[in-house]
Length: 174
Image (cartoon, rainbow, N blue to C red; front, side):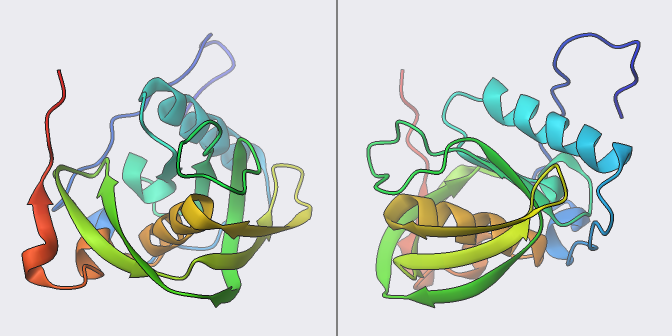
């Protein structure tokens, strides 16, 4: 964890499949104290450091805690956009619709897959200030929220692909 003597962003290594931290449910954060605030900053710093990353869950940086960062700002598939955020102890309150779309994950860097997910969601969690926040999202932001919630429950997109033949090698762009 960061100490006050360490200046600048802290970029944590992203944990890769088959690390066990990715396969088990994360523990609740509880009170938002210094360790939780430091974790939030690490999540944001690490997410910002990866160009195409729109979300990062605490287990992906090796911390089995229910927290994630998210920011779909500027993404071509986003309709709703709540900007950069961190949620602690988030939970899915409601969802509706269904759409199959391609997903990838920083913890599974070589593969993508088609996953069916609700098209709109309501997610509730707590902010850095410990206040409740309710997010109503649709389209890509809803998908991203559900992807991060799955990480907190020990699931990867590979656990939700619509069929085994809908997993693909990730394209490498130059």
